[in-house]
Image (cartoon, rainbow, N blue to C red; front, side):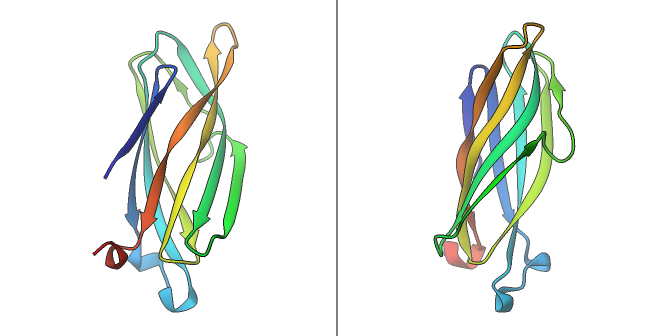
Length: 129
């Protein structure tokens, strides 16, 4: 299932997938991949500067991840263009969720604004039955 949210003309869509070949349930290690699609439906060129993730598993363990860009880049996205990337997350339980915000800069005026990342579930398929 895809989760989508639009903030100030920036549409963020997320799809997730459990990674059984990288997980070790017997050692409480559950790995998930998430695919992010960022679409610029605004009339401005924008650059993604920072990310801030909140990650919560079903054991109620909470992590925050902050940093520059995404997967090592700070992409610039022109009006009508898209940027897509895949990343991952490990949890100590079979289920959890993530949500957060990106910090963007609007070109050429330099205005900074936050774009919400929709909350999405990370669920091992056997738990979803």
